[in-house]
Image (cartoon, rainbow, N blue to C red):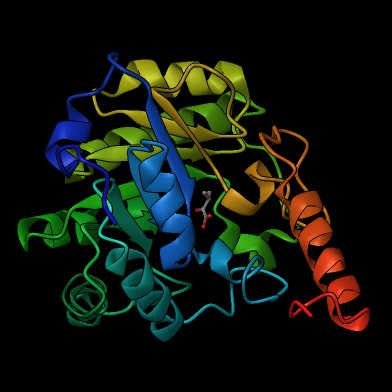
Length: 264
Ligand code: KIV
């Protein structure tokens, strides 16, 4: 099902700093991965947002490694040329190194992901460094880390104070030094985003972090107008797929109930 273009790698993406902007989107199954790849996105993220989108959970916290492996394998089966990255779910990255490595091994060997994404800052850098030296490409994720929502109490913006901005810069530098090939910045005040982007030589990919990044990522259901409930204010809706799906299903119901399908 793959479109005819060269497979993206962490190495080629890393070289995009300051160059062609990086387009990333989430996907959780083979069909959406197919469409995302055909559109030419650079990164397909099997995000733990699979929890609050496809699985109807209230946050990303209940998402397990088994769920990530299951959905990543489906995305990989689409054969995308885009880089397929999967989230290391809640708490996994904080276990002993052997356990973290085993989680990444399942994500890469069993599910077939090209790389993993890990939420965390400076304190996780030593673990990330060991993963990178074990051959696991890591996409760092800082700013708002939704896996921390129970501890934070709410989803909030970061980089609102000088202290917070300095911490973001320190986190970004530590993640770069640990070997991350890119950095995701979530819900960061645009002025702070600019400082982080200038502080590192790896590409930054933003969500709700303004326009200074080297690329952008959106949750696919938000971007396509498929989310039935709350959508964050920073999201731009690029299609109204929800309305099209509803139209098709309404038509199907009518056709069956009026014996117009199957054809007489
Ligand atoms: O899980 C996810 O969808 C994410 C978003 C920030 C893109 O990590």
